[in-house]
Figure 1 (cartoon, rainbow, N blue to C red):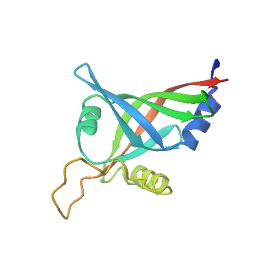
Figure 2 (cartoon, rainbow, N blue to C red):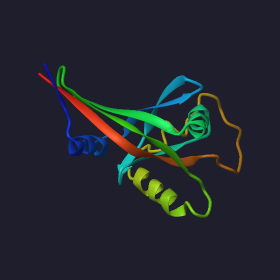
Figure 3 (cartoon, rainbow, N blue to C red):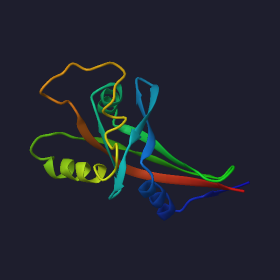
Amino acid sequence: MQIRPLSNSECIKLLIANRLARIACVKDGRPYVVPIHFAYADNHLYAFSMPGKKIDWMRANPLVSAVVEQQGQAREWKSVVVDGRFEELPDRIGHKVERDHAWTLLSKYANWWEPGALKPAPRPVSDHSDHLFYRIIIESLSGREAQD
């Protein structure tokens, strides 16, 4: 097996081709890693979520990392690590263009709201939805590939 680094353009191709990442955030020196569905565009990962631990932690410390993996044949794989900064796209004046852009990118894909809209406990029924869109501003990318 050989391991080789991926070029920047190969990393971006992997981000474009995939929807599932695992995002890591840190609060008070403690890491937290969860899966997210995302869409890549313009050096950003766009995502959707309901309020919860992940959002609370990213609001407290916007520095995050994400990993996107693609399994190949046998022992072959590719992975990209993204280091970046969380930016919430709130539903208010000044963020409408970015928020609409996030929705447009994500809604191209089936089940784009999962797992961000799903919580283990049932939520009370309300006329108001607490969902939010956010993006990760990519500050650095690195990738590797294993080939037989």
